[in-house]
Length: 398
Image (cartoon, rainbow, N blue to C red; front, side):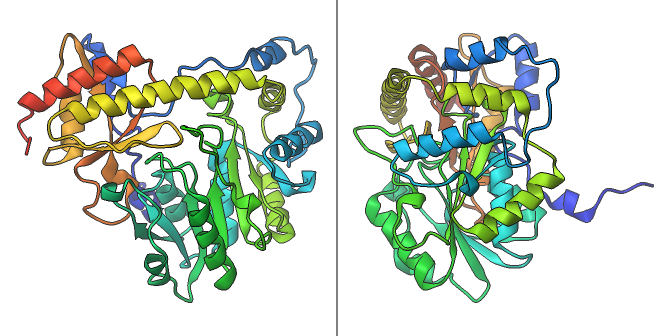
């Protein structure tokens, strides 16, 4: 009998997509699904990008340079400069989404068996990337009680060992929506410098900051140029997730040389995606202003409605378009499954992402779920009404 590899058995299942078969079955029964599980915005992709793709008349769609089309990387340099980040073309390598950038960063910055510290909860796919390369993610626990602020320095110091190679953050954070303060970022920079660690910063939600706040990029921190590796993507910035285009950025020449080796092995990033992304960078500021205003309104609506539900607590995030909510249930995974298999209200139900998959510490997040506020306010209100009614009859309610 043929067998798959032992590693294949150990890879974790995505908490974001694992309930898709149940949702598909519910939809086949005629139930409308409010999809709060996945960060797929309903915001329109900029017209600049769609027009550029529609206007392509090339007779051949060729390979690009393995690091990405040079004109596109030049535009990325200008994009970062507008965000007060000074980098050169050679500091940027275009990837197959932010996913490949994260995979490259982990593979380059740590050997098998070495450790990367990561504030918990964290983007669930980091677990899969780390398991693929036998890298050990060491969680530094955050809690919903303090709205998932960065854990204090002493919690990091307790976990730094001779095997520690990096600190990994997502800023603004997926799944919590926490936006790291300058003080938090400078604390991370100080630890990276003192202990000679990489600081890997996933910054794909840079534009999504609310209430007048601004993101502090790791690339803007002083004195740690060689330590910083940034993961970036156009997926959420321009609402073009299916384009699958991102980039890795570092001033560390050795890191970028290693990234190029990996890029050459997979040949090149997609040609048409780079055309679309390059054009999207000409999007006027008014587009971002409108998007941020819309997400602010959605966030306010969702958080207010969730906190009205008896027993539910939801912090108010300052970035990205996710929040974590705590529910008065025995197990959010069971609750999320039950919503899709046994419940509907006015012909509809809700799909959640159980939070346990966003933790590395066993047993944590059992009563929490990540919620993406990527639907219009009317749908968010209807989804919250579904949840309110569901909690009245869920057999595992606490």
